[in-house]
Length: 236
Image 1: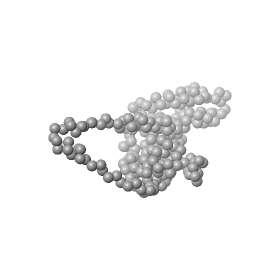
Image 2 (image 1 turned 45 degrees about the vertical axis):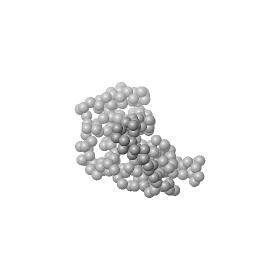
Image 3 (image 1 turned 135 degrees about the vertical axis):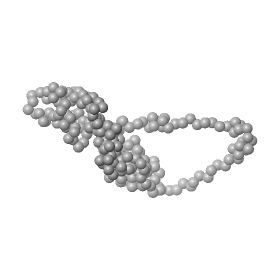
Image 4 (image 1 turned 90 degrees about the horizontal axis):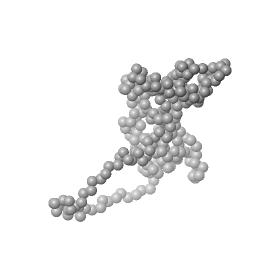
């Protein structure tokens, strides 16, 4: 079968599928559909066809495009049309994640698999509420238990919905911590007391007192569930 004949079938499969399809899935599905053919299509043919479809829909003529997201290939609307699609989705598009949930999600994404206790140790607050919300939104999953810790606590990992939510194909596509920190680093301006001609400023600097530090307390504080302005998910 020629690649030009395969392309419409691939487009139909991706369009009709409720989940992202990878090249292996597509190859198997098409071969099952045309089992009567003596020559089965290969993975290389499917990958070449996918590249052609991606190039086809990258033009300005189409309001959607073919992208790798959520562990496979999906048709997604282009960013220029997100505001228009938001009018159709209404409240669903405007849902928010709280700061606490985003903090917990970031920790799980970079430290997975991880227990709730380890998340709380990093955040310094109780994370029951945020973990529950992330489970309800299917952004994380229970991926097993830590057999090496007392009580064998549950461990959490990000889900395929998480990758779809952030428009990435795998957790390897997440920005590296080093890159994130590098963007935030700002070189401090060093000011010496002797740079001031006003002696009163110098005296005030020398007499500055050390601020009182809050006393440490045992246990974790309850987290806030106040919601912020983070969009719930990208528009498909």
